[in-house]
Image (cartoon, rainbow, N blue to C red; front, side, top):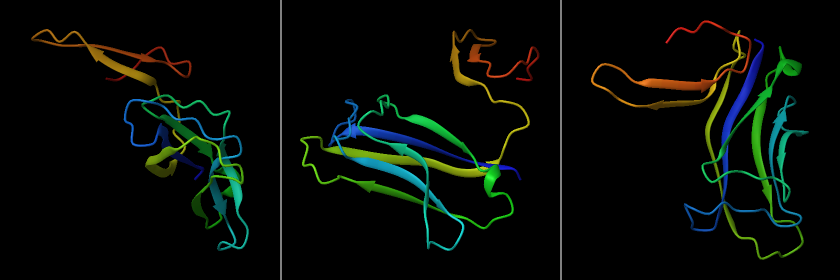
Amino acid sequence: GPFQVELDLAIMQFASSINAGTLGSDDQVQLLITSDGGTTWTPLLLWDSTSVIPVGGEHFVYDLTAYSGSIVQFGIWASEGTVDDTADNDISVDNFEVRAIPSCPEPTAVAVSNFPPDGAEISWTENGSATIWNI
């Protein structure tokens, strides 16, 4: 340790691959954790009607340092709530991973463009204070 949990989440309109969805007024999706074999569950991440997730989904990371030394289980819980809104969505979770927290922040928004015969242009967003990178 210490560890973190990572996942990608997408909320899309039902049967659509091009239109982002919006959860109904009392709809929720939660990432839960338990350290007592499932007797009690604690929400780590919560998505509801205020959550704006882009069409391609979004990557989420949660620091698990508070659970160091514990045996844990995870759950994904979703509820349509009691209000029957018109919202009808597909929820996708992908790339679920528990891993050691990296020693330095990883770059995001990595993009590759301009492919001449002998190279390419690579750009990214630096999320720490690095001034030298190994590519």
